[in-house]
Image 1 (tube, rainbow, N blue to C red):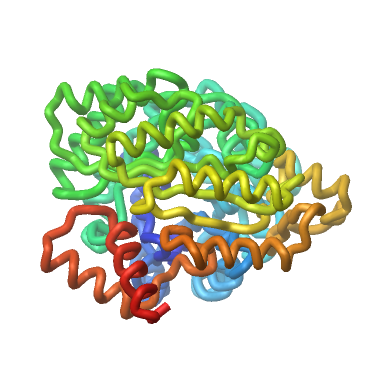
Image 2 (cartoon, rainbow, N blue to C red; image 1 turned 45 degrees about the vertical axis):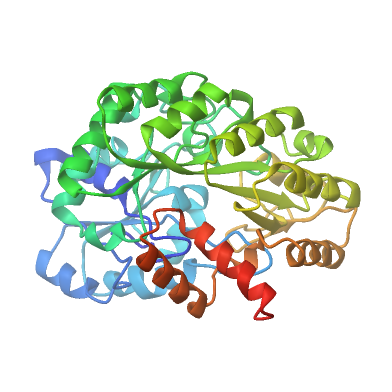
Length: 468
């Protein structure tokens, strides 16, 4: 059961559930219910018709992570999806997913679940069902959860994603992917784990502290076969960083080019340290039409404080390469972390003004969401930002002690007001009238550019006309 219904910035198909379904093979009869578009309205009827012995709920999103406009998804997922199902079935309730794996204890209690899977579920879920089917005892303790019991451990260090079938066949057969085509994308993992040490990040907590890569052949097989079966679809690489370890992204691009695939690609974070002219040239030739760049800051001091692992010169070199290739990019900056002050804030703005293409969007967020098991949590505890036994399920944020929150927000609002391409996290949902105009223009001119570039041009025009 996919509990995620968040459609901003775009709906994400439940690839994880599809991989779980594929891993069960012929051993179990499986039905996938996707709450994304009907928000669970037909869920009770499906449960009644299918009459399952076990129901797994995937909890992906906990909250919006934004301090200036926090939105929690937990209450709706529990009260509108999980508990109504629990009330009409005797099936065992099993929770999993990335959001659940960060807050397993709290969510088990709120959902009154029978069992939980922490971490990667392709093997653990099958083992749990087999054990329950044999009537054997499952747990050595009372927590009723299996998987990576120790946060950040490398329990799955010998498990590589290609050991289970990829999920496109399940998408084709068990969910309506057509609903995702207009705004969504088919998610591709080239690896799991992350060897970096960003102080706020949950990737090492969820997937371990080193990279487990898939073979380039396996990755491109998935892209090619999904493209053949699903038609014209955008493929998005959703790794913690696409171009780590060094050389892996280049090899993927070479394989796509060698097969002469005509596909549309985009990716999340690019690591400035491993970026190069060669990489961006290959990405353009392979079919990339958009990337995300996530330096989070362009202040040397803040790069160190956030544990980013690269230097300002490397971000500058990456930005210059991006502009040479005119590769549309969404830049992400986090303000207000440990040690942020007016000087460090202005250093990031200077970088944006000098290096970022004015046609590219800059996303500006304030405050760092505190997650269990991260270095930031330890820092927040030591500075008494949070209490030792405080649950972080409902958002808590870290703000620098060197600026008041009010002053920081004023600085960000002013920076956004005088820079058309700088958008505050609270303003990421464009007005409906702006979206309508953007869709009309894109249809009339048959534009293939990323939506954010169309919206930025409209924003600039509206600003001139005094409509903003």
